Image (tube, rainbow, N blue to C red; front, side, top):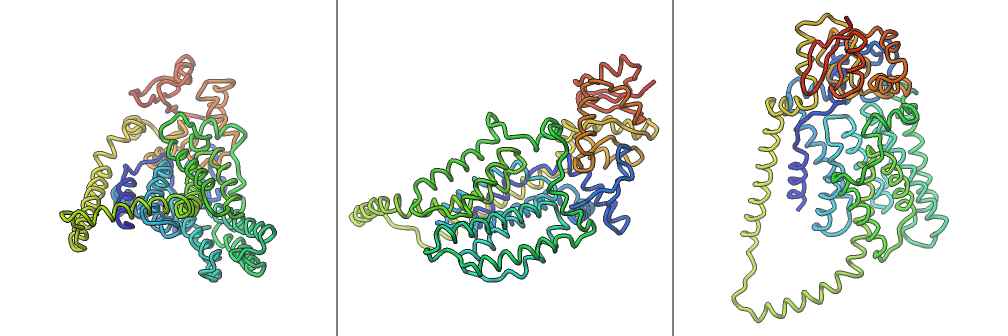
Length: 488
């Protein structure tokens, strides 16, 4: 069942390896490899050129770049699929209940997390989050006392992605929940003692210090607290916005949420302090921003399995057992029915798994083929406009759409962009300036003059295009995806 479930997950994760942020991750990874040291100062934009940048994902970017360099798009696609499968394998071993229940929860969790499955460093954070949760569950169940490797994990995590903050959030939730249980349920045998809670707290504190062992030093601590402005990010960056529950893609999230609520209501055991605090904090985070769907899903899946198993054993299973006994009695009186032999069952199971794996790898090869990737990109990226700039235009500064900045970083080596996906580098002021200029609001012409913009590359339907033409900007290239303008 585990192999079959992971094969289905692999099939779900095999997709076109394209993401707006993927491109600047590849470029900064290339810069790190070329320089032989982490890329920590901006050279890609003209708005933040020379500014220090806390590159919390430098090691992941190196991995992404090397995979793309030697494996191309199929390498990136396989990388994403394998990280997803590894994450779900860890989650499977963390879940309680029977194999069918665990398989169903894995598929549901995968459907929730599918929104963020792309070639980006955050996938590594989800893998490490699932691993940390597995470790903590075993510690709380007294199946292990091993905690000393925790700082080593966070040293690695702090160099791979700023999602290490999710790990500390999980540790804080766990410790806080354990303290609540110690205070409110001291007599229960499952409640950890104060020394056990203290050991976990001590190693958490050591891990918090260990995370600064990276090229950014203590600046690494700033990343979880950096914001990009009051409303700019929510308005302009889709993944920062609250989920829209009118969209089909949010339905698995609702299914997971309400399945957990129902399981808690029917469960024969009380929710632990860690479960209550975790569901509250991760739930609120996921409702504020859909980028938090993944940690919410990974945490909630474990809570769902624990209480769904308890509800099954306490309420549903006894009734089904009665029906099963009745079925066995009727089966004994039917001589022409025979169960499949173990050998036949094994052949059927292996054939089914092999078929799914064959389909999954076939899909991976198809969706990562350069022709398919390019066809997909042509609907979202200004490929033709960039080709025009490379062939005919002099190097200069480009005012660009936010979602295209990373792609321009990767393609145009002699040009500088206004903005790319590194929201933490720009802050709310510059992002708000992009919004206002794109909408041609306020002193948009003064903004372009101040930044010495040579080209405008935006979508055809934005207000800036018409206003720029009125202000003597000339259209150099236009298609259904983009418009390229130059000032006369």
